[in-house]
Image 1 (cartoon, rainbow, N blue to C red):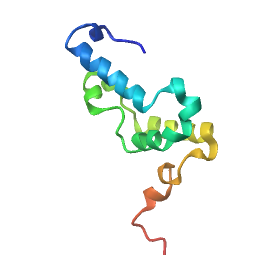
Image 2: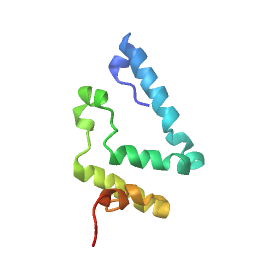
Image 3: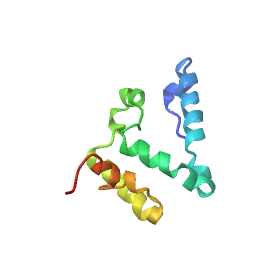
Image 4: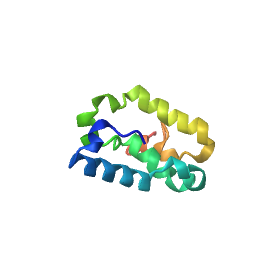
Length: 104
């Protein structure tokens, strides 16, 4: 983790440390080889649903927000990297994108 300068200033340091610990608990790339499939659905869903990055994070780091093209590249990258491991409902053009539409 690259710690920003303000992570050394209380009380902000407490919030930053808590966020990093919570983030690692949810997704720790150091454990990716052993827990990859367990967390994959959650990872893809938060990207697809614009739940990450957190809005509070974007207040201080607006450059961290994904454009639509960047989000699509990320989802496509997951598809190429993980092969068939990407659930249809979060794939571009998947079932969830067509819910409520009749194809008749």
